[in-house]
Amino acid sequence: MNITILGAGAMGSLFGGLLAQSGQQVTLLDINDEHLAAIRSDGLLLATDSGERRITGLHACRPEQATGHPDLLLVFTKTLHTDSALRSVAGHIAGHTLVLTLQNGLGNAEALSQHVAPQQVLIGMTNWPADMVGPGQVHSHGQGMVRVLAPGSRERNASQEVAAVLDAAGLNCAVDPQVWTSIWEKVAFNAALNSLCAATGCTVGQLDAAPEGVALARSIVLEVVAVARSQGIELDAQGCLDSVAFAIAHHRTHKPSMLQDVLAGRPTEIGSINGQVLERARQAGVPVPHTETLLGLLRLIEKRAAS
Image 1: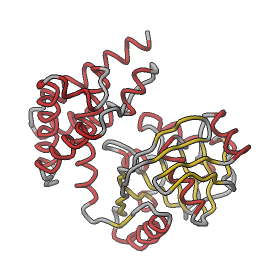
Image 2: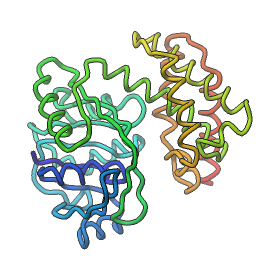
Image 3: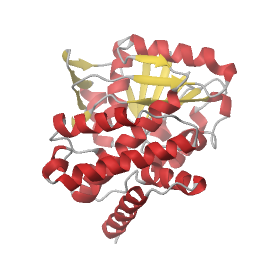
Image 4: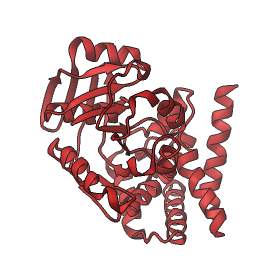
């Protein structure tokens, strides 16, 4: 399969490297010129639980330099860059190209459908861990999964094919008719941990330095669960709480991407996570005071960084 990764940060590079290693033809598109140059010069140095290897044969370039028409475009850009990123590769997307979003948050399928036909869109989620440790170098330790689905019944065969390709690359991928449950579970996790860490400067493990930190995380999870249920998505509240508790206990030094963005003075994905939850909560009349407060704090932090 001819696959293009749009957004070759840590996660995009992990997926691209594993797909290329499994025999797929992979192009990485990004605007990090130093990272792209390192991959073109020396390949991608990928370290996982199965060892370290250097993956060559990847085509790496900026979006405006992309050529040809892939069978699959895998979108990993930050959600706030989706529109501009897709406009930059408009000529790269053909009528047969499937476009799969594995981005954080909500509203991604709708964003993709502004640029490609709805029948070309696949939705999904992943919880694979990945960190970029330097140009051309990505580490991923621990296990993860990918769940995908084509929103329309006519495209179910396409989602099966894509899932098989990702699974063959070792990415533990399956077609999941309940993919929206998985997406909302990740939203609950990110709305709690990403926003709290970004607002406080804490690593994930530092959130239990005071009981209020854990209590806030739990409150946000339960608010997101309530909103999901108002949308007809039945989440396992205890399972979501257990996932957050496990992360606080075992991922103690981890700095979520939203905290990394704040530290770097970059805009965050708070709008597609807490912001989308708040929008749906207002429509359904569900109170989400903690989620709304964290959204306001992050908006203030972003404005301060931009001033």
